[in-house]
Length: 365
Image 1 (cartoon, rainbow, N blue to C red):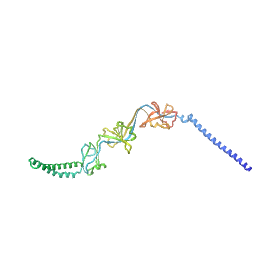
Image 2 (cartoon, rainbow, N blue to C red; image 1 turned 135 degrees about the horizontal axis):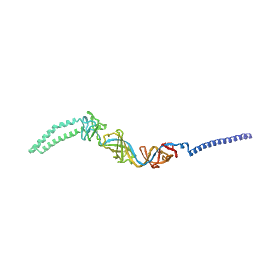
Image 3 (tube, helix red, strand yellow; image 1 turned 45 degrees about the vertical axis):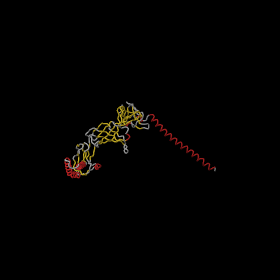
Image 4 (cartoon, helix red, strand yellow; image 1 turned 90 degrees about the vertical axis):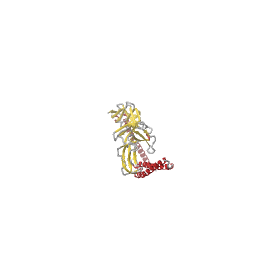
C-alpha cells in the first residue's frame, strides 16, 4: 500500500507541472499576437504609408445649371391613315390600274375584279327594260285619250320601275367588284396581281393594296406603368431617327390613361410635322423630358459610392480628400442631381477616388 502511494505522488507532480507549462505557452502566443495587432493600430492611427502617399486625382467644380431628366424608349412611326384596301366582293383580279409609289385620290379605282356574272344579269334585263318602258309609255298615251283604266297605267309603271330598280341594284353590286381608295395618299404596296383571287377575308393575310397618307404621321411608344404619373401631354419630346440621321423636337400629343392588363404598359403618341424623310413603320428613339430643374447641381453617376450610411462622394480643398454624404435625385445621360450635401463651388473628385480615405493627400492633375 505504501509503495502504491509513493508511485502516485511523482505522477501527480509531473501532471501539474505539464499543465502549467501549456498555459504559459498559450499565454505567450496570445501576447505576441496582441503586440502585432497593437503595432498595426498605431500605424493606422499615426498614418500608414498608404495614407501618406499622394494620390493624383481629377476634379470638377460644381456650379448650378439647367438639368433635364428624360424617359427614353423605342418607338415606331405610323400613319393615322395607313389602309389595306380590299374589295367588298370576291372574285379573280381582272385589272390593276395603279403601281407602287403612285399618288391616288379618294374614290379612285385601284383595281377591278371579274364581275361578268353580274354584267350578264344586267345585260339580260336590258330588253325587259326596253319592253316595260314601251308598254308604260303606250299606256300613258292611251290614258291621255281616256282609253284604258288607271290600274293598267299603274301596273305598267310599276313593272317599268321594278326593272329599273333591279338594274340599279345589279350596278351597285358590280361596284363591289372594284377596289376603291377610301383616302388620298400614296400606293405603298401592291399585294395583288392579275389573276389572283381576292376577297374581303384576304385582308387578314395581307392581300390587297396598301395606301398610306403621309399628311398625318405619328410616333407611338409604350411606357411601363411606373411612368404614368410623371409623363404628361405637352412634355417636350426629342425624336431621334438614326436611319435617316435626323432629329425632330416636338411635344407629346397624347398620353393614354388605360394600362394594358397584359404588358402593364400605356401608350404615348406624338403627331409629326410634314417631313419627306419619315415613313410608316420606321423606328426611332423617343426621349420625353419629364423633369426640369433650372438650378441643379449635378455630378457624374460614376462618382457616387454606396456605403452603409448612404451615398458618398469625395471632395477636396486642393490638398486632402474628404468624404461627404449626399442625397441624390433624378439621373439622366450619366449625370445625377445632388439634392443635399454639396454646394456650388465644391470640388468633386471624379478620378482617383477608388482607394481613398478621409484625409488622403491628393494632387490635382
